[in-house]
Image 1 (cartoon, rainbow, N blue to C red):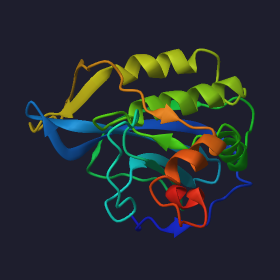
Image 2: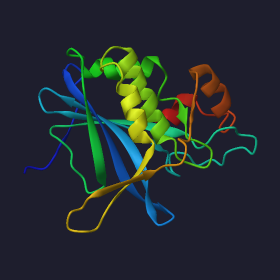
Image 3: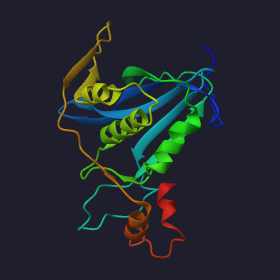
Length: 210
């Protein structure tokens, strides 16, 4: 199989399906790998667009949250595109959600932009990717890109904690997960006001989105 290569975002490509994937991470709780949830768009040409809301690194966010902060660390929405399907060892399980009609990649991206989904802080104490994925899927269903009931289907899957056995069958085990930690979505003006407190001399609080 040839290596997967990064490409420019194929905005005009038509999306056949949205795939929700649960990954394992290096972090553990009670001996189990902490899950991370990511959304992928799969196009008719075989391109894949990855939409990943993650916590910023220490380099990207060198500040300590104020004691009165009613939110977690700022998130970063990474949108990256590839010329073929992605399979990585961290992937545990995935669900493919068929699209209605032939929406384009740019339709999904513009929905996230219009709804300010890049302005997001993680839940207090960490996590928050599940809630972001849930919200994005709900946005896409509301726009008519996914069949009615898709959000409820995904929400049920988000209620699990997934691990992969180390046996030969490599079977996946699903345990009940704690309640979904909810991060916070921000209006751009509120984001500007709040995050300028951390760096008053920054030319724009949009720097926190980078």
